[in-house]
Image 1 (cartoon, helix red, strand yellow):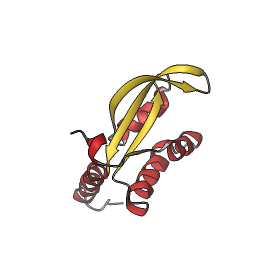
Image 2: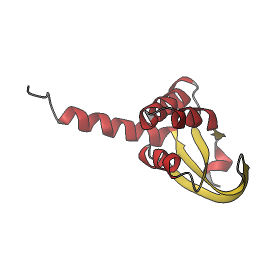
Image 3: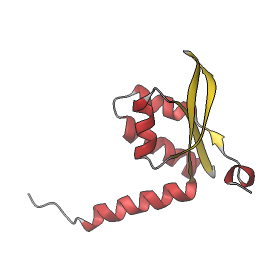
Image 4: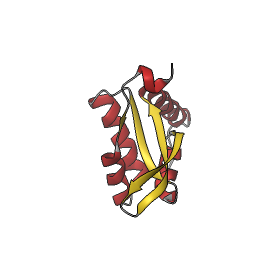
Length: 111
């Protein structure tokens, strides 16, 4: 039984579309993920990305998401090859805590 069969995972296009709109893509995407998991309490996040949209795909890579499916889907530009990206709340929290511990281990910056 796979993850999709055991947990309720929803697609979150709105947050990621907002992240693509602003120049602070990765930063805003992290806030969207935090809100999705910590405030709304969802166990996972899935986001479809058109394969030719490399900037959007890079955001997913940087935030620790992984491709779980590739399929054709309708988009504003017609029917295009689309990757479905996923991350679970547990994976997101583990990744976030690793980043926090790396930042703390650097110590204070001397000026």
